[in-house]
Length: 301
Ligand code: NAD
Image 1 (cartoon, rainbow, N blue to C red):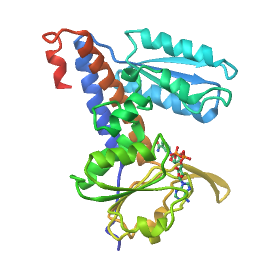
Image 2 (image 1 turned 90 degrees about the vertical axis):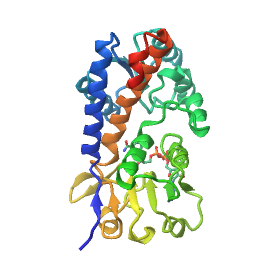
Image 3 (image 1 turned 180 degrees about the vertical axis):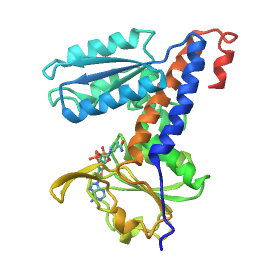
Image 4 (image 1 turned 120 degrees about the horizontal axis):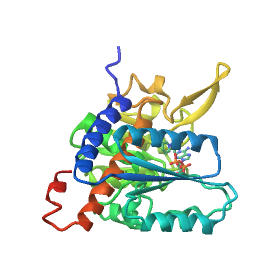
């Protein structure tokens, strides 16, 4: 019998969203209406679903959402003009640019155009640099969600050996920075790593963000490891499309002390942290705009 525990990301995200909703209500009573602007360029079906889900969650939390849709053949100048307008709009607290952008657009330039204080995805170099220096900045939603799950499961992460598999700018690198900030010893593995399986097998904590279905099986895991599976991979199985993670769940389950499922693990946490970041951005902007005496009641958020 396995004593493994399946980490319920959906329930954890729901608890976070309840907290966000309560804070949003208190802010509204204080005359501040947290607002998230979502920009979608083109009509990629998966992106449309992601945007719809984000807007639905925002509405559930009482966060005002504004949706901006640009045609797939829009120019970079048009996108930058929209971002600039939203940066200048004091009623907009957070700006989310849904990725990927159409191939003719320059993603880094567009992300860099978002005002760092409204960058609720945490991708602006100001926020990336702040995270690596340990400053309190807006941090990327997926790794923030993973860290929260780990803290719920493990408590203090100090001194634990964490292995992050994947080094992307949106997941792997910020995840490593957050774990380092939580006082873990961090190893980052990637496509050029030599002896990845043996290195991973030393880890107390494994965060898999690779994009390869079921790459990590029991052979990669130390008995009792805690595993966070970020991967979302579509595979054809038994004549239908299924979502699976980067971890072979059935193989890993008997070996680990806790593991996130796919779906229902990291995914819901990503959206919950988008809402949290929007709330944080709204509070920080209110602090910046108000006098210290007016801002006193905001300090509780
Ligand atoms: P990416 O393609 O940008 O990066 C993948 C990383 O994996 C790279 O750094 C690469 O070096 C590494 N890699 C590839 N093959 C490897 C191997 N055999 N061994 C070790 N490392 C290897 O992907 P990403 O954007 O970081 O996303 C990773 C996965 O997470 C994808 O499945 C994506 O769909 C998923 N994802 C989920 C969420 C969520 O909310 N749950 C959010 C973002 C990404």
